[in-house]
Image (cartoon, one colour):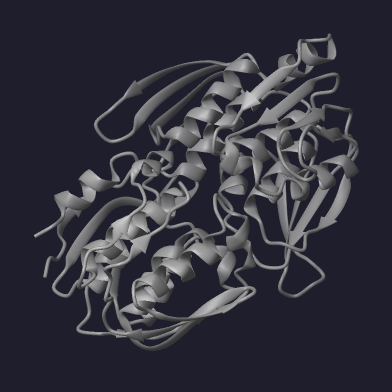
Length: 440
């Protein structure tokens, strides 16, 4: 059987690259982004920002890209659209992050008209969760296709403040409302049922934005208060760490292949995104934080992971899911290699990703010989300590399904037939090469 050994520098964090790009619109002058992820999704954000008047140069490096942005500043962007700038058409490709975050920024550009569209997958994803709260702040919108989905037109307006108690713990919705709140006439408060990744708060505070954080009335909630931005932010430099979501595939691969030991360099370990580490540790996997440090307000370290003699089954609760919804596909594979029953609850959000990940995951695992029980908001896996394999692994062009399918095929007793691998380019273009580089 193969195993993984060696050291790898994973690609830059996708969520943080998106935010550094989009937040550059708030700055007058230059923003430098070191170690950015250059993928299909982040290219969509970069292209959209050019349409708002930002210019940029991109230098592709062996690992990531360095991006230099020159921005006219949010005050000038506001004046441009107030004076009657032409309507903007944003092709967001497969990137829900681009569509949702940019909607928050554009909602406060009074006088502007913005049409958002994307590929067939993005057109199926729910956009009501963004557009309805933005409309409560005063933005206008209309659907140009199916109700609740892209394509849609967003009308920038003079926004008012407001208080939002979100029913779904979504970092993208929180970020959209924070960006809109920066253009509102009074503070905006956003609370979520569970704590979400706080890349937005850390980045904006690093840039000098006044964002308060308090415990909400509900004991389990987290509330953020953002006040209007009345001037441009100063030039700054972002250094993007490695993406924990990309690392998840190597963490799981090392966990399920006995004898594996891998070091992942310069990884962001935001406390709102460490579910994959916490769950694997509960399952018996050794994961050590080495060389811990803080970069641009974010916790960063090197991760050392070593396979255990055997994996222990565990459960993921609804309260935990927001800290690792994107890593559940990888963790589901680890469940198959653990002896016993593992469960995931409160993960209905999996249905709203690039594909219906809940259905694809469970169908694929069953096709690979795993006993799976499916719930409306999750699933249970009866692990046997191995994966039979031999079946067809469907991806629906979902990059995370493609990557975990490649890991599953590697570890299965019989290889899987993958629908495709090309979708990996959405978030991790060199994934297959990096996986092969660690094989022993």
